Amino acid sequence: MFHMVDEQESPAWARVCDLVFQDRRDDVGYYLEQASPKGSSVLEIGCSTGRITEFLADFGKEVHAVDPSAEMIEIARNKIEKLSNPGQVLFSQTTLPELNIISDRKFSLAIVPSLAFMSILSSEEQQKFLHNLRRYLNPGGKLVLEMNVPDPDIILGDPATLYHLMDVDNEEDGGKLVFYHQRYYDDYEQIVETKIVVEFVDAQGIVREKIVHDLSFRYTFRWEMYHLLRICGFEILSLQGDFDGNPFNAECERMIWVAGARS
Image (spheres, rainbow, N blue to C red):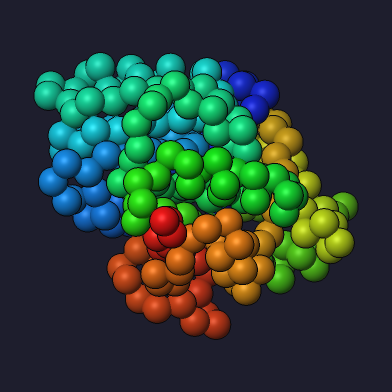
């Protein structure tokens, strides 16, 4: 998996992101449950093309969705406009560390889905982001943040090799998207520099289009993240290994952090 944050605002990459995770559902019910209290308002950071925004709005939630890419926000806005009776949804374009949104209100819930936090590439910028985020939360407001556990296969992989990543069915033409990636890990900065190659293969097996996208992300280890949240004014409420609520353990591939804003 990879995050979908794109400060370069590539239309081609926005299209890929909209296709690749359109059928993902494992996290949607969890976010709906977290937003279930009456009167709750949701700040969604890194909304991408609106996969989660659409579901929250369809259930009548009040959502302020932010993303650095105008291309992705436009796709997300079009999805909301097609809903028959959406909740109140606003969009803002901003980078994640700056997190400068057009709103005077405080939110009861902030979510950082789809590994968006991993797009922040230094501990200083991570602290800046979390401090800015906390300003937009009510006292006792809740943060839910998804990230990947550092993967030894990526850390120790050969940077000269183009690895097959995954295949995704393309419902637009009955073909598929084939993903490859080439990656280099900087073990001092904990940053992975990745080149992602996406081939659009039709139903006859012919490559009709190829997209190449450079993407960087930072691995943050468990106890590093624990202390990062603490020093930025959050209380750790739970750490889960998946969106089914199972506790985090050594076999988990994800960390789902739930934290409360200290007053």
